Length: 417
Image 1 (cartoon, rainbow, N blue to C red):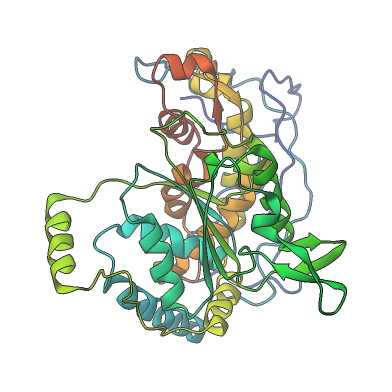
Image 2: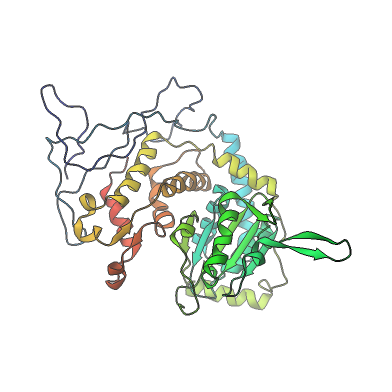
């Protein structure tokens, strides 16, 4: 593989570049910048000082064709030296980490009293909650998506509303409306079910495009507008939407604009035989009775404390550059994964993907008991963050190429810091 050509050149050498232009790049960390937290002792040192396109692969293979590599004598265009902060004003302390671990353990213990297995789903829900984002769940019916959402809401002592989406569902059925009060002769506002801490949109792809768009303001702006009045949504606010991939009749495919507003997309898998056997046992014991709820053990203030601590988790500039390079390759894939595979990508990831990596990696590091992010956190989140943002062509669908395969090849083409 050809080494990435740096911008510094020997004297007398003329820089000529055939590589794609690099994205705007952050500057190397400057130790004299006020407010920059020190790098943790066990964090990995920065190995790159500016974001730039990663080296293109030079040896094609059967599983991952690649584009011709650029010559070593042809350096890339100079990278930008835009300043960038390397972290929040004050990093998370050991006391912060201890408090976060205590809260997370209480949530996990309470959650597992009713949920069997689905550890990946639990982690994804916690990452979305800590990051302050929303999550889209895709699976066949009967895999405990509703149970998982309601159990998490019960554990956190939060309000929970479930909205069953249908083709005749109206926007006012979600956001609320104004009702005429004959006794007073005035209109009064009745808030819709979206005004809750946890909102489950069951089978969101069954609702019409008009109704789906009603959720955009709520998900992005954390508010609704009813009769010209703005109503703020409660904090924390988490939308858990589900969709069924096996039924297409009577459904409306989610538009790209709304898909991009979900921080994560999780594919819920079937339970193992041992987990399914345990489910039957809990059914007999009454643990899974619909009227039996998990007692609330965590307050909303505790959740906001988790979000505050996560916002102070340290991310090294080298990892920020890694995120930027990955997003760049999704938009310019041919030199890195080859024309044969690049033709399957219709659109690359938007800057929201980079923001999602930034936020979710901090939450994942906190779940793993660290106050700093590692490159392994970014790799672990690659499918959750990108599977609904890297859009494939019809040709890819016809040939059975999944977005996860393309994402894996993109990550394989970008050097890990």
